[in-house]
Image (cartoon, rainbow, N blue to C red; front, side, top):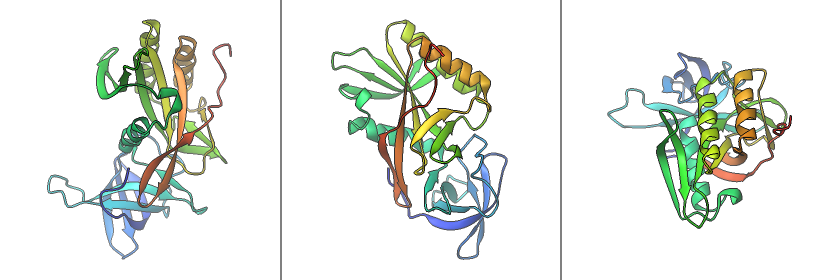
Amino acid sequence: MRFQTPLVPGRLICRYKRFLADVRLDDGREVTAHCANPGSMMGLAEPGTRVWLEPNDDPRKKLKFGLRLVEHDTGHFTGVDTGLANRVVREALDAGGVPALAGYDTVRPEQRYGEKSRVDFLLSGGGRPDAYVEVKSVTLSRHAGLAEFPDAVTARGARHLDDLAAMAAQGHRAVMLFLVQRTDACAVTLAADIDPGYAAAFAHARACGVEPLALGTRIDTAGICPGVPLPLRVAGPEG
């Protein structure tokens, strides 16, 4: 997934109202960017953080910049636009980059299922049971090399796990796919201390047959590409 326009660098002044960020660009201008991330962005929103914005000239958009990347002092990147996660996963699915989900004939996005939900992807064909795939963007890391989800309480995320569990009970494949938008992570775990409810819903869903998967990414200022599958460090259904 390549960015549509070249990114411009700057320093974060502040992030506020969840979806807004004031940034001082390297050329000295101060701009307000759209921040497409409903989470807390823990560890990624401190004033002075190096960030990269994508400009646009779309007359329908009030804000002419979108916050896309955080650049760490180590040279690693984190993709903070959660809206890009499905595009990256779609590329991976089309290219067979998720081995556990390879071999299906069709990949359909945004299909209705469960209780007032839409599954991110419905995979079908190939002589296999339909696979309902939910995608979550992972950006939190409080320990070197370890990414965590979620970074804030997410009742919606817990509901999606319940919907997946229901699909598994009906004999379908149900998959929770964590897309890790950090280049410094080599494994994923749950932030149970941040949202015990999500951790409990995850344990229940897994016991019902929901398959957890994790996929890494390759990120630079040109774009975000699917990486390799990553290990998920959580207890099994038995505890």
